[in-house]
Amino acid sequence: MRDLVIVGAGGFARETAAAVHAVNHVRPTWRLRGFLDDDAALHGTTRAGLPILGGTDHLADLPETAVVVCVGSPRDYRARRRVVRRLDLPAPRYATVVHPSAQVGAGSVLGPGTVLLAGVVLTADVTVGAHVAVMPHAVLTHDDRVDDHATIASGVRLGGGAVLRLGAYVGAGALVREGVTVGAWSLVGMGSVVLRDVPQGEVWAGNPARRLRAADPGPTGPGAERSWARSTSEAPVGVGEVSTPPVALGELAEQRVVGS
Image 1 (tube, rainbow, N blue to C red):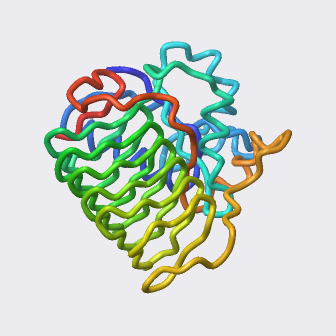
Image 2: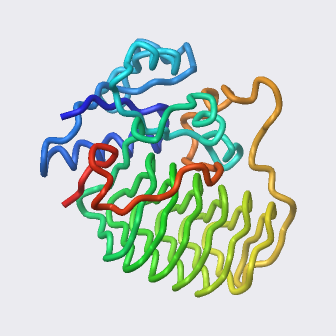
Image 3: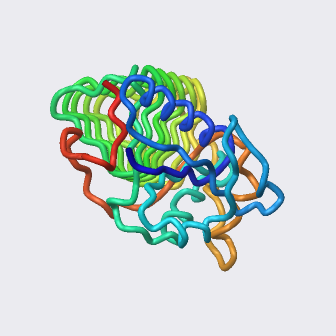
């Protein structure tokens, strides 16, 4: 077993902790030590029965510990990218967490730091990048591609060959037609039906989905890298860059939590 810490202490972080516990129930894999959060007011408290050990600077004292970054909100979905960039850890330090009830089909690959929660289905030949959040009961079908730091909320359905570019966010229950691309930094509202390509950096919603406005995925300026700590109780979102190639599920070794 390998030690593991979760960066963040909000809803997504606690959901990921529950997934780790579920995996350990099937096969002991990780010693989950607790959460790291840069909100000093949380230090010394507990969430989901686990301690908040301190800020991310505490990682300097944990050189052999695996990490999974679970931060962000719909109002700041650059957060995961900022934290991953600031931590600047090598890919083998990141755990890939797959809930035991998730199904990962033949030919599918997952990048380091990615989380699949309960009931997720990847049917066949699905490529998921690094630090991607896939929420409960989302379905990704054949030949879908999801780039780094995207978020797929609960109940989303992606048709075959759909593409989510860098940091895209797809809200709960949305449907994305086969072959459609959702551009980098774009956000699709919950319950939307996406029938055509969504350009980069836009918010779309409705049935059929249409452009509402330009997207505002969160701050990028000086000091922004720690702003996630003020919003860890918000719904999970992530955004990032294609910086680490995905690897086959069978090759993840200690980067992953095996769900079956």
